[in-house]
Length: 457
Image 1 (cartoon, one colour):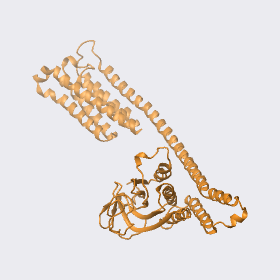
Image 2: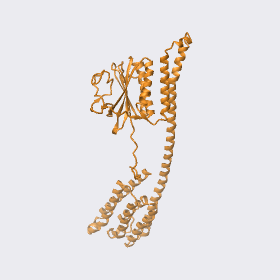
Image 3: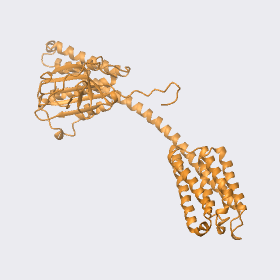
Image 4: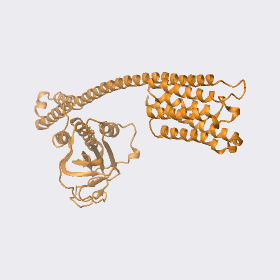
């Protein structure tokens, strides 16, 4: 409907522009008639000014019953008193500039006036033209009679109104179909979300419980049977089982939790991931920075107090504040302490799984036995809160351009997983300089509250 009304307004002012051009052409053709008595130009000039005002209104604002009423009144006054400025050869003819001005005006009430006002406004314009034309003698016996010209005006308005009425019916049907499609799309989205969550839980079970049970079963089935099982590292097995329980409880609770402090949700999950990786032989240092870190929107991180900017590159805190990092960059001053942002539990779960994949890549590919994980608050666009997690190592590093596109660990398990929840993930690495993974989630903008009087903002 909005599109239809916009097209109708554009069509109406286009027709009025054509009418203005026709009036100018008529004045040029009959210039001898108008130059003989220049006051006769008042009629065409008034028609052009009226049409220009309507064109301006239709182009810059929405038309309504007021515009239709004023336009009809102006056209009726012109039709009643402007026959003295119509050339005698054109008086009573439907090709006169006056007839064209009136017929182009009747589009406005037919399309933009309320349905109850269309017929009265149309009859007023047609009757005014009839009365005005009856005061002038026809140019020739074959000229159009005033009654026929008025009937043509009414027929033109009826056709215009009927055409728009049919288009409005189609537009309403299209809007209703779009609303139904939107409802179906929302239902499909809910189903897709549930399916995605179900697949995520299946992957979680596979990556935790099933892998743990498989490892324990294989260890107990080797030579020596149960005796070898008794020789297992009980502490490592208990830590791995505890890690599995922690991650599963956190994932199952994400659907019920609406949000919580990053220290309550994300750090617990990251500590569980770190415990798993330590059991696999990787030394993981986990720290939480309570200071605020400002995002510049360019991949850099800005300190909340000093305004310094540091690239989102490898390890920044290994050698202490102010010391160069492994690639020669100097870190910014420590951020001012402040509260960590609150994030939904589902987002915390996604970030923890992304950290798990990043640490797994360190254990498999980096050629080092040490990694650092740091969590801190971030101030995103418009001052909104959020969280940033970094995973870094001093391993072999790699060239991003030479990574096999078939490898899905970085793209699917880190970048796409964080992007699904509205965050951003970036991986910076270079041969011999280690790898720096940045996971950043900005809090969404709060909904705009309605003013006390209930009107929309």
